[in-house]
Picture 1 (cartoon, rainbow, N blue to C red):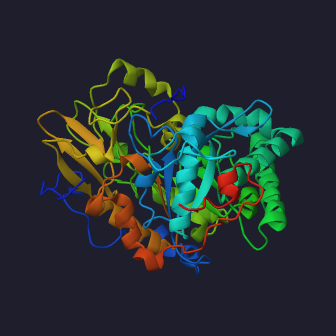
Picture 2 (picture 1 turned 90 degrees about the horizontal axis):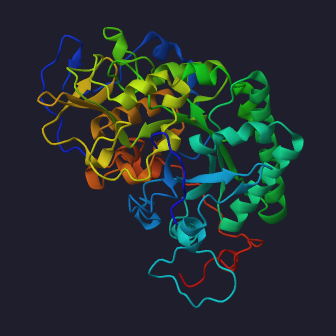
Picture 3 (picture 1 turned 90 degrees about the vertical axis):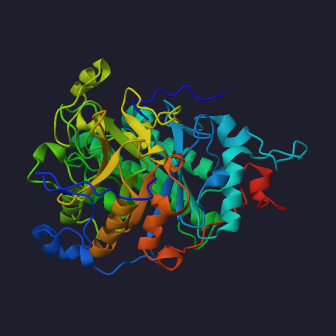
Length: 470
């Protein structure tokens, strides 16, 4: 059955020729990335990459098989390097466990037999393993936590016993399911003691992964990543240098910069600030990247997040301007930016139609809405659509803005891109995942490190045997 998860919230063929407004907004992105002094001087970001290629990582949710009807077989495996399978739950004792056993392990797809002998994994777990067999560059990570389960981190991470239980059980799930690593999504540590607990948790998991590899997969490196905040009040509370030695990548959640908690409309995933229109850009990706690198995080370890959804505002005259708030939106003004930047964990399970929800979230695949024009803010390097007849404004990435972000990744020497979440993308030329993959060099430019298929101690007979015959 569908997991009872309480979530706070959770295609463009042409760019319009809307004329520029007084707010330095134009209809198409410029051919070169916006230059800023910090951008030019940040030479640390131009250091030589230490990986085999760029990451193109995609969150895939275990609830997406229901309302969105998005199955693991639909993942664009030839265009991505990592799948982040979200989310595993956390018990009060620290045990990492399935949040939906039917989706994870029990659902039978048309090619699955009902007559197999032994104990076997089905559901998304088996299908992800099959994708790994057919696409050896595709690594699958178990993503743990997310906004809904994040309150469970603090008490578990506070003790040696809790941390050990967490990491041991996470690694057990990883090897039982035939995955290639872990993605930790704690939103967010809020005190110095919790920041230190997070460091200790990562250290314990890194040690556990290395020990497991030495015993069961000599020479293989299991990946450890985190979902990283882009809001200063959240990353300022983290011990970034303390966490970094244990991590392979930081998945920067560079979205949800604006939403129903604000009194004005705004860009939700802009690269830069628009100094001519401050209400439109309260946060920026470039600021977050600059702060991370200034604290010693290598640029090639920062993976830029892109949303596969839009943030909608009703009854407005433009970006950075007031809008008509519903009662739920007015109440949500009291939310902090910690809450506003939790979209990588909060996508609504039933959000499958092109309609505005109370939380104002729309899937990218349903955009732009009929009657809306797409507009480019050259100062912010951000796209949005606007319907002057209805006053509806939706902030989201387009193929054009995704191409600009791909160039930004190359210019700054970042580690690649990551997207929330798979069911929101379009197919074909309008796929944001595909546009960025191509911008980072296509198949030849992406990380081709091989995944692991051998899990001799998996509890599941078919995973242990390599899912033979399929």
